[in-house]
Image 1: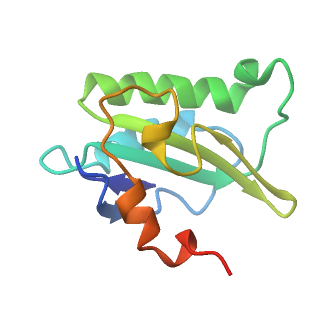
Image 2 (image 1 turned 90 degrees about the vertical axis):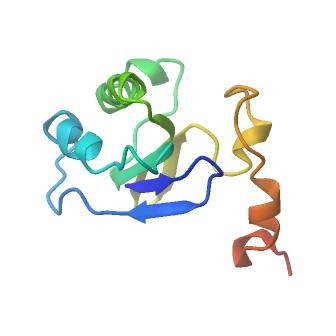
Length: 125
């Protein structure tokens, strides 16, 4: 889990569990309780295992669980901006991989480009 403040600056990084078996449900409360109401505004999660990216993408169990987590987080004042599944073949994501302000998530997101440009990941060559 990665937490970001209102300016999308890194706030926290945490491991919720070392034993993920494909479902977010058992960890939803731990994820929500791991966020800091006084400083965290945005967050993203990552876990082992990817899902199929087909026309029924939103109906896959772990994606639906992520959507429920996002709603529960919103009720607490947090905004989930990313959900990543990772395995040896690559990764899948719900939400943008970078430049969050340039995706259709809403006009209320702060600009991330200045931060990305200064990151070692934002440089080419």
